[in-house]
Image (cartoon, rainbow, N blue to C red; front, side, top):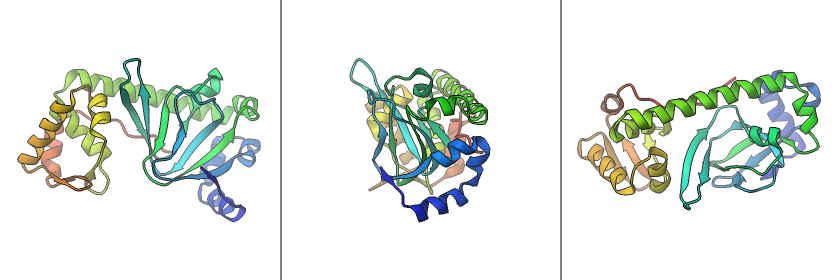
Length: 229
């Protein structure tokens, strides 16, 4: 996590001027842009709540470890996404871990010194409320998919959502937990998609060879994408 210098701060404020429209002038001036490297954590489970993050560039994934020791992939964030809003209200430790998938930029409002100013910022509260509603809707939708569709349909849908430039790469253990299946069942299903000519396994992931066939395999199952302003 690196605080960017004055010149870069100015450039990013000009580039992401839309953020000014969702918060008070006071919070806009108090916040700072930070850069995160690939694989770096914004925070991990149990860390003290220290900031409200607005992801403005890049993508990150959210995971949680349960009592059995398994780590579940909860979601991906991209676009302009609020991170750490639950802890903002509850004032306790972070309940999940958030890790950058590549280099990214966040606009950061420090807690606890900014907590009251954030909570009294009606524009920012409205934006956070909209994002919370969308996250709940997305969670409900994805839970419904896991209950209602076959693994092949769910996996095809997720690949279409998570692929970048025609390549899908993911930690198999996290993905199996996220899709509610065994590691073996996941690998078997990926193998079926490869054997049918839909995917091709490569050194850095799976390349989509036939997107239309993958869409047909997904059917009407889909994962809800991120919110943008």
